[in-house]
Image (tube, rainbow, N blue to C red):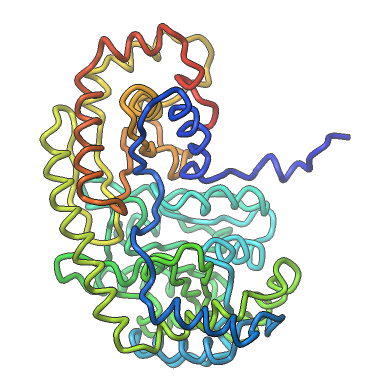
Length: 435
Protein backbone atom coordinates (compact mmCIF):
# COMPACT_ATOMS: atom_id res chain seq x y z
CA UNK A 1 0.00 0.00 0.00
CA UNK A 2 1.39 3.41 -0.99
CA UNK A 3 0.86 6.64 0.90
CA UNK A 4 -0.85 8.49 -1.96
CA UNK A 5 -3.56 7.32 -4.31
CA UNK A 6 -2.71 6.46 -7.89
CA UNK A 7 -4.83 9.30 -9.21
CA UNK A 8 -2.84 11.83 -7.16
CA UNK A 9 0.22 11.00 -9.24
CA UNK A 10 -1.76 11.89 -12.37
CA UNK A 11 -2.39 15.47 -11.28
CA UNK A 12 -0.10 18.24 -12.47
CA UNK A 13 0.25 21.79 -11.20
CA UNK A 14 0.52 25.39 -12.31
CA UNK A 15 4.11 26.50 -12.70
CA UNK A 16 3.19 30.16 -12.26
CA UNK A 17 2.97 29.23 -8.57
CA UNK A 18 5.48 26.38 -8.56
CA UNK A 19 8.28 28.72 -9.61
CA UNK A 20 7.66 30.73 -6.44
CA UNK A 21 10.25 28.87 -4.31
CA UNK A 22 12.85 29.45 -7.03
CA UNK A 23 12.08 33.18 -6.95
CA UNK A 24 12.50 33.19 -3.17
CA UNK A 25 15.76 31.25 -3.45
CA UNK A 26 17.11 33.72 -6.00
CA UNK A 27 16.11 36.65 -3.80
CA UNK A 28 17.64 34.99 -0.76
CA UNK A 29 20.91 34.78 -2.70
CA UNK A 30 20.80 38.55 -3.20
CA UNK A 31 19.19 38.76 -6.65
CA UNK A 32 16.66 41.50 -7.27
CA UNK A 33 13.87 39.70 -9.17
CA UNK A 34 11.40 41.31 -11.57
CA UNK A 35 8.33 39.07 -11.43
CA UNK A 36 6.68 38.59 -14.80
CA UNK A 37 5.35 35.13 -14.03
CA UNK A 38 1.89 35.60 -12.50
CA UNK A 39 -1.21 36.57 -14.48
CA UNK A 40 -2.42 39.00 -11.84
CA UNK A 41 -3.46 42.50 -12.93
CA UNK A 42 -1.69 45.29 -11.11
CA UNK A 43 -3.81 47.88 -9.40
CA UNK A 44 -6.92 47.40 -7.31
CA UNK A 45 -10.57 46.67 -8.09
CA UNK A 46 -12.78 49.74 -8.59
CA UNK A 47 -13.92 51.33 -5.36
CA UNK A 48 -17.60 50.54 -5.92
CA UNK A 49 -16.66 46.87 -5.69
CA UNK A 50 -14.50 47.10 -2.57
CA UNK A 51 -16.87 49.57 -0.91
CA UNK A 52 -19.72 47.10 -1.36
CA UNK A 53 -17.68 44.25 0.14
CA UNK A 54 -16.77 46.35 3.19
CA UNK A 55 -20.37 47.48 3.71
CA UNK A 56 -21.65 43.90 3.46
CA UNK A 57 -19.16 42.76 6.09
CA UNK A 58 -20.17 45.63 8.36
CA UNK A 59 -23.81 44.65 7.91
CA UNK A 60 -22.99 41.15 9.13
CA UNK A 61 -23.41 39.41 5.78
CA UNK A 62 -20.79 36.86 6.74
CA UNK A 63 -22.76 33.64 7.19
CA UNK A 64 -23.51 30.61 5.05
CA UNK A 65 -25.50 31.30 1.91
CA UNK A 66 -26.94 29.42 -1.07
CA UNK A 67 -24.27 26.96 -2.26
CA UNK A 68 -25.23 27.73 -5.85
CA UNK A 69 -24.58 31.42 -5.31
CA UNK A 70 -26.65 34.40 -4.23
CA UNK A 71 -29.77 34.76 -6.40
CA UNK A 72 -29.00 38.47 -6.88
CA UNK A 73 -25.57 37.68 -8.36
CA UNK A 74 -26.84 34.83 -10.51
CA UNK A 75 -29.56 37.11 -11.87
CA UNK A 76 -26.99 39.78 -12.73
CA UNK A 77 -24.73 37.27 -14.49
CA UNK A 78 -27.61 35.68 -16.42
CA UNK A 79 -28.86 39.06 -17.58
CA UNK A 80 -25.46 40.48 -18.59
CA UNK A 81 -24.04 37.30 -20.16
CA UNK A 82 -27.28 36.64 -22.03
CA UNK A 83 -27.45 40.15 -23.47
CA UNK A 84 -23.84 40.06 -24.64
CA UNK A 85 -24.19 36.65 -26.29
CA UNK A 86 -27.72 37.02 -27.59
CA UNK A 87 -29.08 33.99 -25.75
CA UNK A 88 -31.60 33.41 -22.98
CA UNK A 89 -30.03 32.38 -19.67
CA UNK A 90 -32.03 31.50 -16.56
CA UNK A 91 -30.38 32.45 -13.24
CA UNK A 92 -30.68 28.82 -12.13
CA UNK A 93 -28.31 27.83 -14.96
CA UNK A 94 -25.57 29.78 -13.15
CA UNK A 95 -23.37 28.43 -10.36
CA UNK A 96 -20.90 30.61 -8.47
CA UNK A 97 -17.49 29.09 -7.75
CA UNK A 98 -14.36 30.19 -5.85
CA UNK A 99 -12.42 31.44 -8.87
CA UNK A 100 -11.97 30.11 -12.37
CA UNK A 101 -10.18 26.83 -11.65
CA UNK A 102 -12.92 24.81 -9.90
CA UNK A 103 -15.15 24.87 -12.97
CA UNK A 104 -12.36 23.25 -15.01
CA UNK A 105 -11.97 20.39 -12.54
CA UNK A 106 -15.70 20.08 -11.85
CA UNK A 107 -16.53 19.93 -15.55
CA UNK A 108 -14.07 17.10 -16.11
CA UNK A 109 -15.38 15.26 -13.04
CA UNK A 110 -19.04 15.64 -13.95
CA UNK A 111 -18.96 14.70 -17.60
CA UNK A 112 -15.97 12.38 -18.11
CA UNK A 113 -15.71 8.70 -17.29
CA UNK A 114 -12.41 6.87 -17.25
CA UNK A 115 -11.10 6.68 -20.79
CA UNK A 116 -13.16 9.57 -22.14
CA UNK A 117 -11.14 11.99 -24.25
CA UNK A 118 -10.72 15.66 -23.42
CA UNK A 119 -9.62 17.98 -26.23
CA UNK A 120 -7.93 21.15 -25.01
CA UNK A 121 -5.74 23.92 -26.47
CA UNK A 122 -1.97 23.67 -26.10
CA UNK A 123 -0.32 25.95 -25.23
CA UNK A 124 -3.15 26.66 -22.86
CA UNK A 125 -4.02 27.16 -19.22
CA UNK A 126 -2.16 24.31 -17.47
CA UNK A 127 -5.10 23.08 -15.39
CA UNK A 128 -6.83 21.77 -18.54
CA UNK A 129 -4.12 19.14 -18.95
CA UNK A 130 -3.19 18.61 -15.31
CA UNK A 131 -6.71 17.62 -14.24
CA UNK A 132 -7.50 15.33 -17.18
CA UNK A 133 -5.43 12.41 -15.94
CA UNK A 134 -6.56 12.98 -12.37
CA UNK A 135 -10.21 12.36 -13.28
CA UNK A 136 -9.28 9.36 -15.44
CA UNK A 137 -9.75 11.13 -18.74
CA UNK A 138 -7.44 11.00 -21.73
CA UNK A 139 -5.84 14.38 -22.52
CA UNK A 140 -5.86 15.21 -26.24
CA UNK A 141 -3.92 18.42 -26.97
CA UNK A 142 -5.03 20.64 -29.82
CA UNK A 143 -1.77 22.30 -30.76
CA UNK A 144 -2.01 26.00 -31.55
CA UNK A 145 0.40 27.14 -34.24
CA UNK A 146 2.34 30.37 -34.07
CA UNK A 147 2.01 30.96 -37.82
CA UNK A 148 -1.80 30.85 -37.46
CA UNK A 149 -1.85 33.42 -34.62
CA UNK A 150 -2.42 30.60 -32.11
CA UNK A 151 -5.95 29.88 -33.28
CA UNK A 152 -7.24 26.87 -35.20
CA UNK A 153 -9.78 25.88 -37.78
CA UNK A 154 -12.50 23.25 -38.13
CA UNK A 155 -10.31 20.71 -39.94
CA UNK A 156 -7.78 20.65 -37.11
CA UNK A 157 -10.54 20.07 -34.56
CA UNK A 158 -12.25 17.45 -36.71
CA UNK A 159 -9.07 15.37 -36.85
CA UNK A 160 -9.05 15.03 -33.06
CA UNK A 161 -12.70 14.12 -32.49
CA UNK A 162 -13.35 10.40 -31.96
CA UNK A 163 -16.25 8.35 -30.55
CA UNK A 164 -14.51 8.70 -27.15
CA UNK A 165 -14.52 12.51 -27.21
CA UNK A 166 -16.59 13.84 -24.30
CA UNK A 167 -15.29 17.33 -23.66
CA UNK A 168 -13.87 20.06 -25.92
CA UNK A 169 -12.18 23.01 -24.23
CA UNK A 170 -11.95 26.39 -25.93
CA UNK A 171 -10.24 29.49 -24.56
CA UNK A 172 -10.61 32.87 -26.26
CA UNK A 173 -9.02 35.29 -25.57
CA UNK A 174 -6.24 32.82 -24.89
CA UNK A 175 -3.80 32.40 -22.04
CA UNK A 176 -0.84 32.35 -22.77
CA UNK A 177 -0.94 33.32 -26.45
CA UNK A 178 -3.41 36.19 -26.63
CA UNK A 179 -5.19 34.50 -29.53
CA UNK A 180 -8.76 35.61 -30.30
CA UNK A 181 -11.44 33.90 -32.38
CA UNK A 182 -14.03 35.74 -34.44
CA UNK A 183 -17.61 34.59 -34.93
CA UNK A 184 -16.93 33.12 -38.38
CA UNK A 185 -14.28 30.82 -36.91
CA UNK A 186 -16.55 29.79 -34.04
CA UNK A 187 -19.39 29.07 -36.44
CA UNK A 188 -17.11 26.77 -38.44
CA UNK A 189 -16.06 24.96 -35.25
CA UNK A 190 -19.68 24.68 -34.16
CA UNK A 191 -20.63 23.14 -37.49
CA UNK A 192 -18.09 20.35 -36.88
CA UNK A 193 -19.28 19.76 -33.32
CA UNK A 194 -22.97 19.77 -34.19
CA UNK A 195 -22.50 17.40 -37.14
CA UNK A 196 -20.08 14.90 -35.56
CA UNK A 197 -20.45 14.88 -31.80
CA UNK A 198 -23.13 13.25 -29.69
CA UNK A 199 -25.54 15.71 -28.01
CA UNK A 200 -23.96 14.65 -24.71
CA UNK A 201 -20.53 16.02 -25.70
CA UNK A 202 -19.92 19.32 -23.94
CA UNK A 203 -17.90 22.37 -24.95
CA UNK A 204 -16.20 24.18 -22.08
CA UNK A 205 -15.74 27.77 -23.27
CA UNK A 206 -13.26 29.54 -21.00
CA UNK A 207 -14.03 33.24 -21.47
CA UNK A 208 -12.30 34.62 -18.38
CA UNK A 209 -10.47 37.28 -20.47
CA UNK A 210 -13.61 38.34 -22.38
CA UNK A 211 -13.27 42.01 -21.43
CA UNK A 212 -9.54 42.35 -22.20
CA UNK A 213 -9.27 42.79 -25.96
CA UNK A 214 -6.96 44.91 -28.11
CA UNK A 215 -7.18 46.87 -31.38
CA UNK A 216 -10.98 46.91 -31.57
CA UNK A 217 -11.33 43.13 -31.44
CA UNK A 218 -14.71 42.06 -30.08
CA UNK A 219 -15.43 39.07 -27.90
CA UNK A 220 -17.31 36.20 -29.52
CA UNK A 221 -18.68 33.12 -27.77
CA UNK A 222 -19.44 29.78 -29.38
CA UNK A 223 -22.55 29.70 -27.18
CA UNK A 224 -23.98 32.39 -29.49
CA UNK A 225 -24.03 30.00 -32.47
CA UNK A 226 -27.56 28.56 -32.83
CA UNK A 227 -27.72 25.12 -31.27
CA UNK A 228 -24.52 25.51 -29.25
CA UNK A 229 -26.22 27.08 -26.22
CA UNK A 230 -27.52 23.57 -25.46
CA UNK A 231 -24.00 22.10 -25.46
CA UNK A 232 -21.77 24.88 -24.12
CA UNK A 233 -20.60 25.62 -20.60
CA UNK A 234 -19.59 29.28 -20.37
CA UNK A 235 -16.87 29.84 -17.76
CA UNK A 236 -15.83 33.28 -16.60
CA UNK A 237 -15.22 35.33 -13.49
CA UNK A 238 -14.04 38.63 -12.05
CA UNK A 239 -10.40 37.92 -11.21
CA UNK A 240 -8.97 39.32 -14.45
CA UNK A 241 -11.56 41.83 -15.68
CA UNK A 242 -11.77 43.60 -12.32
CA UNK A 243 -8.18 43.08 -11.08
CA UNK A 244 -9.67 41.06 -8.20
CA UNK A 245 -7.76 37.78 -8.07
CA UNK A 246 -8.11 37.54 -4.30
CA UNK A 247 -11.88 37.89 -4.42
CA UNK A 248 -12.19 34.35 -5.84
CA UNK A 249 -15.40 34.91 -7.75
CA UNK A 250 -15.78 32.65 -10.76
CA UNK A 251 -18.87 31.18 -12.34
CA UNK A 252 -20.14 28.59 -14.77
CA UNK A 253 -23.21 29.00 -16.98
CA UNK A 254 -24.62 25.57 -17.79
CA UNK A 255 -26.71 24.46 -20.78
CA UNK A 256 -29.47 23.38 -18.39
CA UNK A 257 -30.66 23.86 -14.83
CA UNK A 258 -30.20 20.13 -14.28
CA UNK A 259 -26.49 20.42 -15.00
CA UNK A 260 -26.13 23.49 -12.79
CA UNK A 261 -27.58 21.49 -9.90
CA UNK A 262 -24.69 19.04 -10.24
CA UNK A 263 -22.17 21.88 -9.99
CA UNK A 264 -24.05 23.05 -6.91
CA UNK A 265 -23.74 19.55 -5.43
CA UNK A 266 -19.98 19.60 -5.96
CA UNK A 267 -19.82 23.04 -4.37
CA UNK A 268 -21.59 21.64 -1.30
CA UNK A 269 -19.13 18.77 -1.06
CA UNK A 270 -16.02 20.89 -1.53
CA UNK A 271 -16.69 24.46 -0.38
CA UNK A 272 -20.21 24.75 1.12
CA UNK A 273 -20.57 28.24 -0.35
CA UNK A 274 -18.72 31.30 -1.58
CA UNK A 275 -18.43 34.28 0.84
CA UNK A 276 -21.65 36.28 0.41
CA UNK A 277 -19.96 39.67 0.89
CA UNK A 278 -17.66 38.99 -2.06
CA UNK A 279 -20.63 37.86 -4.11
CA UNK A 280 -22.36 41.17 -3.42
CA UNK A 281 -19.19 42.93 -4.53
CA UNK A 282 -19.32 40.93 -7.75
CA UNK A 283 -22.94 41.91 -8.28
CA UNK A 284 -21.98 45.56 -7.87
CA UNK A 285 -19.16 45.11 -10.38
CA UNK A 286 -21.51 43.68 -13.00
CA UNK A 287 -24.40 46.09 -12.47
CA UNK A 288 -22.60 49.40 -11.96
CA UNK A 289 -22.56 51.46 -15.20
CA UNK A 290 -19.07 52.71 -14.39
CA UNK A 291 -17.62 49.21 -14.75
CA UNK A 292 -17.67 49.13 -18.56
CA UNK A 293 -15.50 52.23 -19.00
CA UNK A 294 -13.26 51.09 -16.13
CA UNK A 295 -12.55 47.73 -17.82
CA UNK A 296 -12.04 49.41 -21.19
CA UNK A 297 -9.44 51.72 -19.68
CA UNK A 298 -7.61 48.77 -18.14
CA UNK A 299 -7.63 46.95 -21.49
CA UNK A 300 -6.13 50.02 -23.20
CA UNK A 301 -3.37 50.06 -20.60
CA UNK A 302 -2.53 46.42 -21.34
CA UNK A 303 -2.70 47.10 -25.08
CA UNK A 304 -0.15 49.91 -24.77
CA UNK A 305 2.16 47.70 -22.74
CA UNK A 306 1.80 44.84 -25.23
CA UNK A 307 2.81 47.01 -28.18
CA UNK A 308 5.88 48.41 -26.46
CA UNK A 309 6.99 45.11 -24.92
CA UNK A 310 6.55 43.12 -28.13
CA UNK A 311 8.54 45.72 -30.08
CA UNK A 312 11.28 45.43 -27.47
CA UNK A 313 11.22 41.63 -27.59
CA UNK A 314 11.45 41.58 -31.37
CA UNK A 315 14.64 43.61 -31.08
CA UNK A 316 16.40 40.75 -29.24
CA UNK A 317 18.51 38.49 -31.50
CA UNK A 318 16.92 35.05 -31.77
CA UNK A 319 13.48 36.18 -30.53
CA UNK A 320 10.26 36.67 -32.46
CA UNK A 321 6.95 37.64 -30.90
CA UNK A 322 3.48 38.21 -32.30
CA UNK A 323 1.24 40.92 -30.99
CA UNK A 324 -1.47 39.47 -28.73
CA UNK A 325 -5.08 40.29 -29.58
CA UNK A 326 -6.34 39.93 -26.02
CA UNK A 327 -5.61 38.82 -22.42
CA UNK A 328 -2.41 40.36 -21.01
CA UNK A 329 0.55 38.22 -21.99
CA UNK A 330 3.39 38.24 -24.49
CA UNK A 331 4.42 34.80 -25.77
CA UNK A 332 7.71 35.12 -27.66
CA UNK A 333 9.43 32.33 -29.59
CA UNK A 334 12.98 32.07 -28.17
CA UNK A 335 14.27 29.16 -30.28
CA UNK A 336 17.02 31.27 -31.86
CA UNK A 337 18.04 32.73 -28.51
CA UNK A 338 18.41 29.25 -27.03
CA UNK A 339 20.57 28.24 -30.00
CA UNK A 340 22.72 31.35 -29.53
CA UNK A 341 23.32 30.32 -25.92
CA UNK A 342 24.26 26.76 -26.92
CA UNK A 343 21.53 25.20 -24.78
CA UNK A 344 20.95 22.32 -27.21
CA UNK A 345 24.61 21.36 -26.97
CA UNK A 346 24.41 21.33 -23.18
CA UNK A 347 21.31 19.11 -23.29
CA UNK A 348 22.98 16.71 -25.68
CA UNK A 349 25.76 16.13 -23.16
CA UNK A 350 23.40 15.55 -20.25
CA UNK A 351 22.97 11.94 -19.12
CA UNK A 352 19.59 10.23 -18.93
CA UNK A 353 16.44 10.44 -21.01
CA UNK A 354 14.38 12.87 -18.95
CA UNK A 355 15.78 16.30 -19.67
CA UNK A 356 14.44 19.82 -19.32
CA UNK A 357 13.56 21.80 -22.41
CA UNK A 358 15.84 24.57 -23.68
CA UNK A 359 13.17 27.12 -22.73
CA UNK A 360 13.00 25.84 -19.14
CA UNK A 361 16.79 26.03 -18.84
CA UNK A 362 16.74 29.59 -20.12
CA UNK A 363 13.92 30.33 -17.67
CA UNK A 364 16.12 29.31 -14.74
CA UNK A 365 19.22 31.05 -16.09
CA UNK A 366 17.25 34.28 -16.55
CA UNK A 367 15.86 34.00 -13.02
CA UNK A 368 18.94 33.06 -11.01
CA UNK A 369 21.56 35.06 -12.89
CA UNK A 370 19.65 37.98 -14.40
CA UNK A 371 16.76 38.32 -11.95
CA UNK A 372 13.69 38.09 -14.18
CA UNK A 373 10.93 35.50 -13.63
CA UNK A 374 9.04 34.20 -16.67
CA UNK A 375 7.36 30.90 -17.57
CA UNK A 376 8.46 28.38 -20.18
CA UNK A 377 6.36 26.67 -22.87
CA UNK A 378 6.09 23.49 -20.78
CA UNK A 379 4.14 25.42 -18.18
CA UNK A 380 1.20 25.48 -20.59
CA UNK A 381 0.88 21.84 -21.58
CA UNK A 382 3.63 19.26 -21.97
CA UNK A 383 2.14 16.58 -24.21
CA UNK A 384 3.59 16.93 -27.69
CA UNK A 385 5.28 20.21 -26.85
CA UNK A 386 8.82 19.07 -27.65
CA UNK A 387 10.91 21.49 -29.69
CA UNK A 388 8.54 24.38 -29.00
CA UNK A 389 10.66 27.04 -27.34
CA UNK A 390 8.54 29.87 -25.99
CA UNK A 391 8.30 31.85 -22.78
CA UNK A 392 5.37 33.79 -21.35
CA UNK A 393 5.69 37.27 -19.91
CA UNK A 394 2.78 38.66 -17.93
CA UNK A 395 2.01 42.26 -18.86
CA UNK A 396 0.42 42.81 -15.46
CA UNK A 397 3.33 44.89 -14.20
CA UNK A 398 4.25 48.52 -14.69
CA UNK A 399 5.72 49.47 -18.05
CA UNK A 400 8.95 50.41 -16.29
CA UNK A 401 9.23 46.93 -14.76
CA UNK A 402 8.35 45.28 -18.06
CA UNK A 403 10.95 47.22 -20.01
CA UNK A 404 13.58 46.50 -17.37
CA UNK A 405 12.63 42.81 -17.38
CA UNK A 406 12.90 42.53 -21.16
CA UNK A 407 16.27 44.29 -21.04
CA UNK A 408 17.43 41.63 -18.59
CA UNK A 409 16.16 38.88 -20.89
CA UNK A 410 18.11 40.47 -23.75
CA UNK A 411 21.25 40.54 -21.63
CA UNK A 412 20.76 36.90 -20.62
CA UNK A 413 20.26 35.91 -24.25
CA UNK A 414 23.57 37.46 -25.26
CA UNK A 415 25.61 35.79 -22.51
CA UNK A 416 26.63 32.28 -23.64
CA UNK A 417 29.64 32.36 -21.34
CA UNK A 418 27.43 33.15 -18.37
CA UNK A 419 25.08 30.32 -19.26
CA UNK A 420 28.03 27.94 -19.54
CA UNK A 421 29.24 28.98 -16.09
CA UNK A 422 25.72 28.61 -14.70
CA UNK A 423 25.58 25.01 -15.87
CA UNK A 424 29.14 24.14 -14.92
CA UNK A 425 28.57 25.35 -11.38
CA UNK A 426 25.73 22.81 -11.22
CA UNK A 427 23.35 25.25 -9.65
CA UNK A 428 20.56 23.41 -7.88
CA UNK A 429 18.04 25.25 -10.05
CA UNK A 430 19.77 24.64 -13.37
CA UNK A 431 17.74 21.50 -14.08
CA UNK A 432 14.57 21.96 -12.01
CA UNK A 433 12.24 19.02 -11.64
CA UNK A 434 8.92 19.67 -13.32
CA UNK A 435 9.71 23.25 -14.33
